[in-house]
Image (cartoon, rainbow, N blue to C red):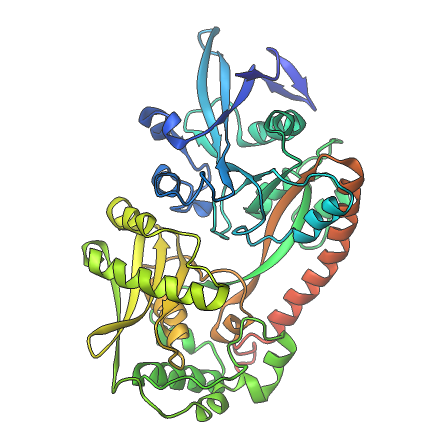
Length: 474
């Protein structure tokens, strides 16, 4: 146990009773009773991923630890003093999922250039400490707190920040990276008042000076927002007539099973300027170029939940997942078959599978997670390239499900400007970074300042080509 603060220490006007932290090397090192007392303090940013079941699944199926380059180094925050009884004791009051990493893959916040700069100066960048959900670029809280904790969320965050150097020294890590935080949680960790007061931020969290060291980094994802739509058609009524016709034709082609031609439309790397060009924004033009060579007369697309997700369904999904990873990346994916089977048995109420059948055989599948607030599109794979089938399975079926379940929003996954034309809105994502080496911390701060300008412009460009009607209804 690493004791950090003595009793009744005041920091920036906030009174800390004796708090301490220690690394937790497996979620199984926490008792079920302790897990049961931890919760997300803000339901709006809860997810199925920050849970015992999900983190346990990653560990037990060898997706992390071992030779994966992800080594569990979770942070437990303990209260060593009971204010009511004035007794000394040891109680887990907060948990942060963290991993010591020996590479930068599977994070989706890219810092390879930082690692290369360290290597150029013969300074080790790895291991680094990353607070995140592995392989899951989804905005959400990165801390669970005891339900009746006498310390506020803000106090616990401040405690973490003030002890970052000690945590990194004990972990022998070069840096701390906290990925995909809600904006207000990211603001609790940043130091630069210009960032706190920037136009895209809310008011400053405090008028008191601080020495917080974690830099803020922006990125952009594309998220669908449910504005009380009654149906998919109701959602499409908010679009221009040209976009509605395009989506209807795209969905029709998907279930006809026509083989996709090699077209730039829908490419993950397509520039927004190309999207803005009507020749590519009009999907009808792309559909005309599709080879009229059906895989089958009809494709049957189904949404499956709960007990409908049988071992056979999950095996079909996993084959699609592996094949697609192998084609795109040269390996069979970060996640193991045992992990997906764990999800099927232990998180059945939080997963949904969209599966496409041609002549009774699976040809494509997508896996989603959901809770009472949000839908999360996570994994996709296909055995045949069919025009529009990726969009049907990964986007349109998800939108229909979110409307049926009255979910607030649908995050379909990272990257992909082609989502914009299908109603997914550019949305800022936030991460925070601290590099112990002061020269590199300054260099990264300068880099992030310049990068931020480009990211803000990128989002504005994305907003400008959304397919929705203008206020005049046109």
